[in-house]
Image 1 (cartoon, rainbow, N blue to C red):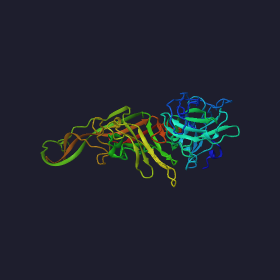
Image 2: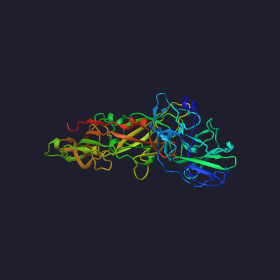
Image 3: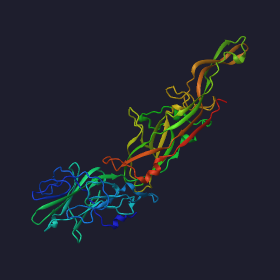
Image 4: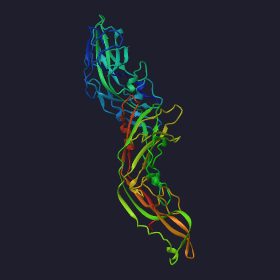
Length: 499
């Protein structure tokens, strides 16, 4: 798409730390101070600028010479349209006054290049730029230059000749992440930055004007679609579903590929831009209420051949097992563990996951990088999966190591969990006359007969950065509707054990 910024003459420059090194005849204006030689070596003192915060508006109506001024819109409140297959930004945030203090500036890094991005555009230009008029008489135009510094004294851009002023003597300077010249730190440095503007008269006397801003580069936007219910909500006890995967203790060993638990919700994340995005993913505490009904029954685990007298005992009661206790129930707050992972939707490969394989379980995913979209592919889809495991509240046998004894429909049906067969009970399976010829061996076990969970609504927490050098920032308000996962209820049905 065409970027309308191409049709505007814009220039934006970062205001950097302590003033540049100058000769003894130099006069310093604006923020910061310093002294030194008047060559182009880039040496400087470590003077720092004001700590003023964000402002609004474009500065005074009448700006005195030597004042670097301008305004820029806060891009955290951009409206972003993904319908064309790439993001189209409409900048609609508050205006930040760049002439006051050291204001915080939030801008999308991938829009800060001299050329339009491969994918993505902006419907209205929002250059980070400063304007200034010289207060120096008998100006030596050939010496007019600017440079950019970081808060730690690093020279991001050494003295560079300024473009000619307009007919009124007004200079405009803009920094590009990639351009001529380039200041890559505009796209990945979080912190104060400074711009020095140097003027020199024909006698060799210099004046350096300085401005400052606090740089907050934003990662390229991701399209996050609304959450959809997943596997658990289609599982039932009558269908012999794998409900035990929600109940059992899942491995937190990184070598297990983190395919843990039962999936409860999924969200599609579309990477539209040719920019890698570093993610931090987390969610609110997931609250829920759970209930269940557990039935104890005698289970046959093995059968053996015996010769045992049953003289004087009815065949049905020959060495009969004790009666199993009646059903037990639970109703209260759900106790469970929730995991999240990011999967490449096309290949199924896990891109990022938690827990992270460390000794202690960590809920959040940190440092997850979604690769840049290639020039030949459509928007790249990823699936964010929320899963539940260790749901002790609905476990048939909460006290066991695996939190589950059996989850199945009836004795002849396959297990979805672990058979414990506690105790040592026997019962005669084949009687001939007064003798038991075959004997069943086993014991009491626990079976999930009913289960129900009411999940409260919760929110996804997303922070992004252009790369590991920049600080993570909260994702823009454009994604807010998709960061909420609605309340939902799951019912496992009735296995029929208590009938």
